[in-house]
Image 1 (cartoon, rainbow, N blue to C red):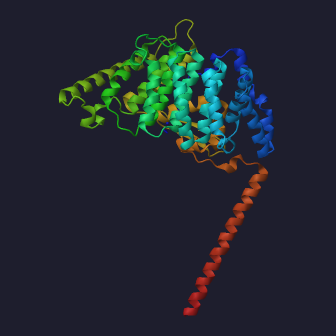
Image 2 (image 1 turned 90 degrees about the horizontal axis):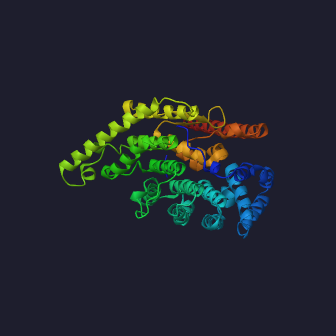
Image 3 (image 1 turned 135 degrees about the vertical axis):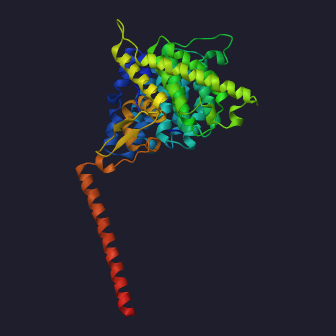
Length: 434
């Protein structure tokens, strides 16, 4: 599990669904009113009853019934912290979610993939999320290998990134997911060499973003720079892609490689860098990496100042210029990006100050959608990732604040009384000695 400010993340996969699908997802707050009411009244039994009803619906043969249940469950995961309700039901939920990924429609696969990722984030790092990763990884990889429609592939990529980020316990597990994503980014290096396929721009951008997000977690592991030469070279060619989202995703991936020193041969031990066993091979690798650095810097400079032209999307163009200017500032001057988000109270602010943190923030913010702030305030996983200490009194009602303050005052009074008694006892003891 890893850690990292903001460079305009790629849009979510839900705009790849048709308008009726998008409407059903966006209007799920209304569909979830029964669960919302049960939460408002804080009746745990009622909450469990509603959750069990949704789980029962996942067993239905009719696809529309399963989709409706998934809409409600996804909205529940976004709107509430369901850890206490799902920690003993996660295996059942996971089984049904994976069934939906396996046999569902595009909409059902999209919703089930989101639900799996949200379930992992809700449960946090540990054995449960590791099981989620192990059980879901094969099914999600099958979706990617089948080269199905774009919406399915994008939802599978996002889900694979999240469950590996939360559930992976070592480099080997992370590398499996990174390879599955890279096989989408650069199919020639994958298993489908006989029939090389070219991903559509939205899928390619999503794959690069997912790969980059997961790459933020490898910082503590020693990596042989020779193994990064080909991926970095290929990503540098994508800076010249026609699609702006692909260019921006490739830029973020490359600046992360800079931050992780994956282009820096001298940052690794001789034995790691010199796979050929001679000084000559290390020198060649060093020169190749220097040439790549120069190429990337030049392309980033051009993209940071790209002219608009007739019919250009001004907002996306501005986003691109801003991103590549920040990349250029980092590559040339070592200036890290800085960003902050107000969470709740006056003192509660989420701050990031590295590319790794920024990439993680943008990805999780996009994946959690409207539930991002809720999870930041109440989910220990996100608080650990971004090192957040939330002042819970800021979110209490006026009545709860009065109770909280009275409890604090009571504790303070008890402490003062204890100190007075101890001081009096010491004084009495001193008088007896005299």
